[in-house]
Length: 271
Image (cartoon, rainbow, N blue to C red):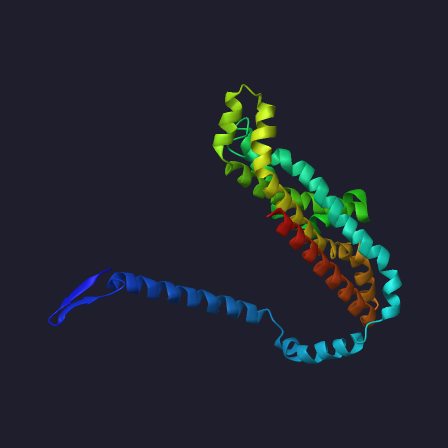
């Protein structure tokens, strides 16, 4: 903490004059960047539609209420498809993410120069592309439907699960591994009895957490033709059937809340 000597005595300050000037200069740069970005956004925005948005939103809300409850019979199978997309996609992702995580972790990879970079590349590449984009690519390759949605969710989830899992592997206690190794156990026995028991709680938590996320993501995959309740939502939006849209949104909300409750209960039981 800098001290400034004055005739009245020393004055304690939190920062020196140079540090204070640098701090203010940083704030000015941030303000200038914000104003520049705002001006660019303003140029590309039609403010008439923005000012008219409350009236349009009110009109749509008036058309959407009350929901068309009789349409609920058409949503049971699509919401079941959505749950299947999320569940199967998560299972496939976990099966593929486990070996990738062991190859990416520093303490389990067979080669830090060759294998580990390849595993990290898989993790980064699968995480960097949104599931909607994966779905669009897969629909062009294998056609529309639930299968494309399952594969899109699975690919998107591999990097997420593998990243968290390999970090958990790197944080394990080396004492237990060294004790099992000292008994003459093979590499696979060390992994089965020294590493897997330590990461099992983390693996279960990652699986439930990713399944919860995939429930949310799978609800919109139907907008691009990848199956699920999103197909019904897209069809209702195209025909301006707002009472059906409101009902579909309520069903999606119920499914998400239910998945959140289930995941919270499972995580609490694990922890």
